[in-house]
Length: 386
Image 1: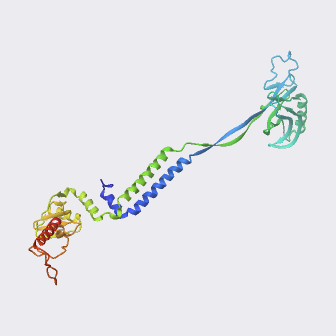
Image 2: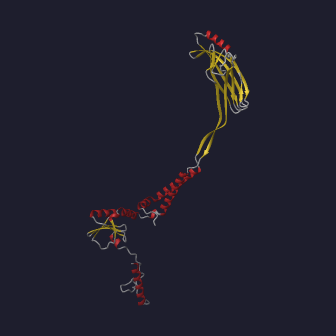
Image 3: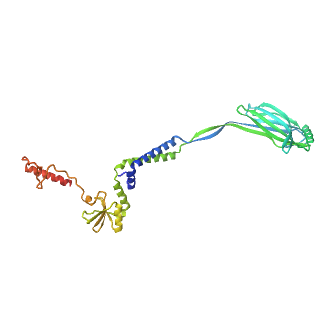
């Protein structure tokens, strides 16, 4: 069974066999290299991971003790608003939560500012506490207090002096420095302290926190895409198999004329019948260049093309005219193929006896019986080859 049955493929191989074989081989090797590369170099992804995570939080706890509970029964000591007469002193307790052993410094300041249209034109600061402590059992605490009655008098004096110039604003600032041994940093918080002639309150909580960690990059190796590896591997094997098939067909030995004839025979199979054409049919023989030309004549004359497989001859017989195509030669060559008969060693006369070459006399020792035997043998050889 032939390796390739399609005549169009055969024609392609016959015309471009060497280049096609090289292209298929190169494509196959490249596909296998790609498959191996994908298999040996799986994809990698990078991800970040947080380690040594530590949280630090500072809160300024505010409370005010009621001096006369009987007179101010029902007033909360840790509410959002405090009565100056009931609680003239407010306590502020900075409290920091951090890993044990962390060194913490609490600094609480009271600032009074004179402002006009948002610009500060007068400034006063009082450091209420600056204390360093070590975190034990997860906490470090400091404490201080503000005499609100004294502060109220100070503010009333400033407001009188700055009347018509600007307004007076009081703020409390809490700053915490920390050193955990791994991380160092600072927490800050601010709250406006409103003081009227009868009460005071804080506009916001004194609170700040941080979470510290160390970020590292992790490289993760995934699995190769085995589907793609298989696809390229299969393609490589197919290309190499194709290159081997092309090489096995021996493109340089392929008969291009026979291949083209087979292409035309299959294309015009509906117009071709198989049969035996007599040698003496017709009187005029017209040789055409291609089988396609013979089919055109059959179409024009509404005749059939007869394919004589013995002679590999395609012909249209129209009366005494035979239109034919044969890749082996003209009509006479196809009808009477050349016979390669062996040459006789000695001339033979029609009677079967051997004659001596010109200029030589017959040998006396040659007998009549021997001549007859030689003649019979030569005739048998000739007719056997014929």
